[in-house]
Amino acid sequence: MNHMMDIPLHAGPEMDRAINRTDFFRLYKSVCRASGFEYFVLVQHTDRGSRYDPVSSFLLTNIPDHERPALARALSDDKGEVHSRMHSSASPFTSGLSFESLTGEAEASSANCALALPLHSPEGKRYWLMLAGKRPPPGRRELAELMLDSMRIFAKFHEKILVGEASAQLTAREVEVVKWTSEGKTSAEIAIILGLSEHTVISHITSAARKLKAVNRVHMIAIAVRKGIVH
Image (cartoon, rainbow, N blue to C red; front, side):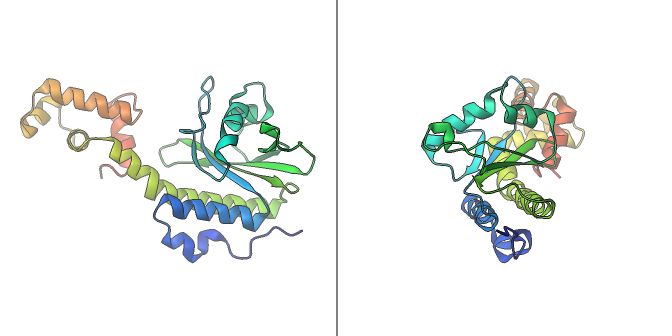
């Protein structure tokens, strides 16, 4: 069976109109349908030693709710093949993992194919799009098309959804403080500009840096610029 997609999704009208999570869910579901996979999950990569959470780690998925904990456990298993390859490789890979077999609803078989496609945000965070279904592994040309579609869809998902959610995590005052910090103002200068105490300004900077997972002020500004919080 030829699983090639007739029209690349990154070039289609649905891609142009995507503005919310439902739109992007439909796009990734279309990737599954067009390529002969049954399930997809967009996963935020975790560091070694951290476990995948079936709620916070899975950003978009059509996997039934009752199957997600088993998949999260399988991805967290540091002795498992998929976990090892996710942490040692930045290239697409396939495995015989069956999402259904994790819960005992179906037997694993040689016909099962789980495809993991690596994705990256502009600030360097890692993600994976995992596709699974009863079909053979994709050939080189199909893999290239799947990778291109996945990257283009994720880039817009990051721009429309993840950036907005990250910005929304900051309070209006924290955004103000980050913007003034990006312009080279010291905590004392920002305190005068905003009519706050220097201690309060430092607290806002510390909170913003924590929410953005920055290690210092320079890193915080770099992340805020990449996320579009400041320009």
